[in-house]
Amino acid sequence: MSKISLYFLHGWGFSADFWNETIQYLPSEKYQIILGEAGYFGQRKIHLPPKKFIGIGHSLGFMQLLEKTSNHPNCIGLLGINSFPCFAQQRDFPDGVPSRLLERMQRNLAKNPSHVLNQFYQNCGNEKQISPDNPLNLDHLKKALNILVLKDMRPLFNAFRVEGKILGMLSGKTDPLSPAKHLWTDTQTQIDSGHLAPLTHPTFCATWIKKSLKS
Image 1 (cartoon, helix red, strand yellow):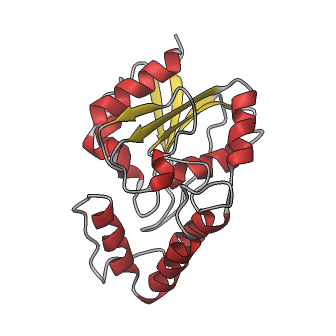
Image 2 (cartoon, helix red, strand yellow):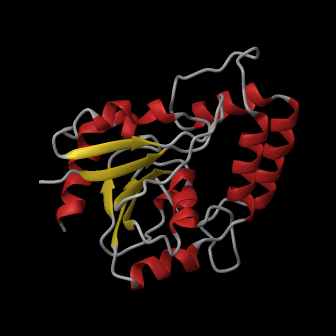
Image 3 (cartoon, one colour):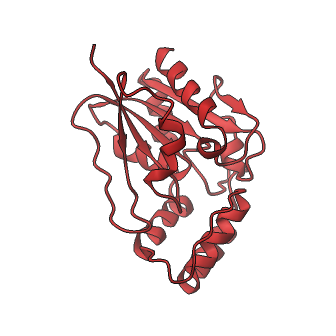
């Protein structure tokens, strides 16, 4: 029996090891785990598998997968954890984050990137801290933040649903980021967590992934 390929992509400000706690509950004899790396702290490595796969994205990582897998013949499903297809507030999306807050974050990122990251971690309930001398790839951080500010991928999200592919969303009831709490599908699963469910509730996330693949 062939393994199911799972391609994971982390969110803004994190790295591929974000998934370490969750993937340990996905047995290697059944799943082939592939971790994408957005390169916020070094080299970027986002190469989609050359065979059929399920994409699993956290936060911004889900938006990036939506864009990358649009019309991609090998992607047979997408799962989003604490995620969204649109982040910034729109006329028809009041649950989005106001653009002025994101633009302020962009300005501050250019001045003091480690402070912006540490503030972001704190807002998400994570004790992770980056020192000022920590090597950061500011270009990748800026470009990724621009996706949150400028992109609205709801049309891609809706097209994915129409195509009948596997599509699941897991949201945290106490997530401080309002777009991640928005009800994106009528089958959306909720958990008593904040924005970092793969870190705080890894067993639940792994179980939810396995159940989603069987649906």
